[in-house]
Length: 273
Image (cartoon, rainbow, N blue to C red; front, side, top):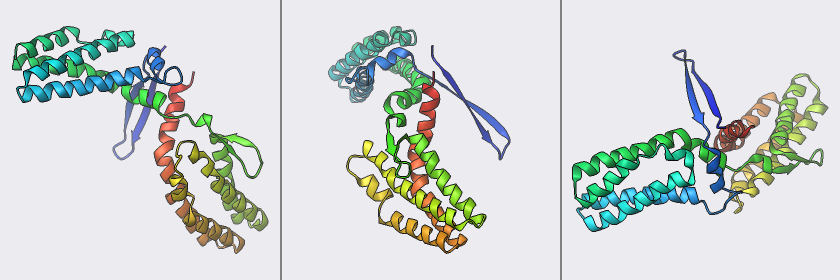
């Protein structure tokens, strides 16, 4: 059974709530993505169809009818194949219009080409609007649940979500203890936060194999800010503490979150039983 995810987006400036409905693709789509298949048959069919459509329209515009016929046949083959790969999509195909498009190209009927190409293209775009985003999130985006991070404080392997919670707890506790004048505990949590943030680089190498991301986000600048943060906590300099935490938030945390967090949350919503 397909899942319908409804996300309410509140636009406070005009006090209007908008509902965005995302529908998960049929389960059959999953047969053509890892781990069930490494061939990407469905995705390759999409690419072949898109290329054929461009080839068709390019050659029609250039009045190269021989190649236009070649490309419309490739388009038809892959268009029909979609319904065979995923039977649930078959009913949305405009097969009559596809056949009419092939005949229009053979007859060099420009009006027929335009009308039927538009109908076929519309059937593609309607399916994309409904399923493309959720398909990308579910089948293209890697799962963070597969990544464990060794916590340098507890010496245990944690899932990413649990690790992030411990790290952010350390960051918040250092603020709390500093405000409560519990200097020793504040310094301890500052060190815990620094160690956990540095160790977070383990997660990057799971996907970013060239180490460049680690150098950008976990390099010299971050080390300097973490050292400055710890020294500020030790000297009870709250202004410097906030200054360094803000820098880390903007230059490390936010940049990674903007890239990964939203999609990770969506994947979690869409793949929950």
